[in-house]
Amino acid sequence: MKGPRGTQDLLPGVTEKWQYVEAKLKDLSARYNYHEIRTPIFEHTELFQRGVGDTTDIVQKEMYTFTDKGDRSITLRPEGTASVVRSFVQHKLFGLANQPTKLFYIGPMFRYERPQQGRMRQFVQFGVEALGSEDPAMDAEVIALAMNAYRELGLQSLKLVINSLGDTESRNNHRQALIDHFSPVKEELCSDCQSRLEKNPLRILDCKKDRDHPAMGTAPSILEFLNDYSRNYFEQVQAYLDAMGIAYVVDKNLVRGLDYYNHTAFEIMSDAEGFGAITTLSGGGRYNGLVQDLGGPETPGIGFALSIERLRMALEAENVELPIDQSLDCFVIALGDEAKVKAAAITEQLRQAGMQTDKDYLDRKMKAQFKAADRLKARFVLVLGEEELENNVIAVKNMESGEQENVAIDQITSYIEGII
Image 1: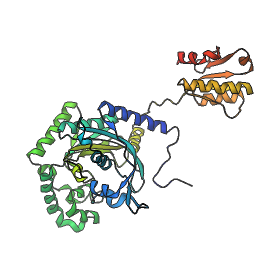
Image 2: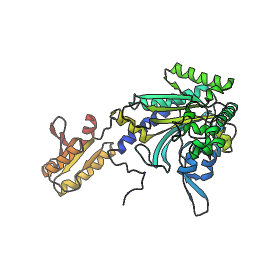
Image 3: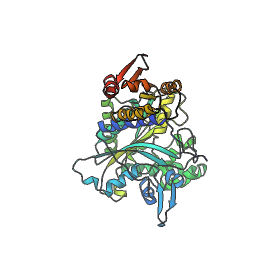
Image 4: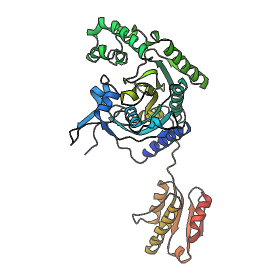
């Protein structure tokens, strides 16, 4: 039997790299004072219909939805923001004394789409959400965190693209302009774009099928319709990014694929050679109306999410080697039945003292056990035979220097600790 299409098994040797990346992301989040939240892997389907939007590809085509035994419609979460905001509202986190509420998450998401490199049906997302502030400096902070997540892991070929989607007034004016622009060529657009024209024409600009249509290049830009407030807000975000020394490109055609975005939108892309046709690593933006849509009080928010799979693709494209230490502190070799019993006790003693320790469980000859220790990159090999037992010592070999000496069994832990 094989795993379902679009899923993967992360095996030893690979999981250590994931653990390293996740630890780095958690450490970075802590430095920005974001705290971890863990939400259910499945939610009521209505959450994503209301939170993500009925016109999105996610809701229309990609969700894993099923009816449970209570005849309720349940969906495996396709993204993290809606779940985090639902939890924020349900547990009244808006009432906490410390505001804004700054949260991060890491976990599996599920989308039914064609599997390809860096795009799986089950994938792992890291994301942050900052709820309760409408300060442009918060937008810049979230973007800075996203950029530093990649930089601290060693990526250099990065491109930050930003845009403003404006407030409700600006969006409504732009929406009508898009309808007027695309209506004459409606029949030339794909079926998805034809249905989006009245419901959410902004999504047409994000279409992969029609991106080469002449009407795309002449479509009215949201930047032309920003009112004074939206224009000033976007200028302030740029001023903060400039002050932080974060380079960016303003792309008037950048839109996000989810319905809840307004004001700042951004994507981070890889410019690494050979990365692939889909260069986007992560994206995010502001969503000031989402909390209200999910039953909460008027609360502004901004966040982003990145795929761990695509991050690892970018690391490989730039030949970044993560500093993973897969060595073993000690490997214990025992020769003889009595020595095996004592070796088990010593192995457990070293482990309880905090040292990575293993021993032979296949009853191999000493030469084969030394080879096993070498494959495991053991720093020290401890050999216990009949002669060592009689003298109450254990032979310790430093595998790097080749030096060997006998150490009293009751002092072995402090001896190894002193060297390590």
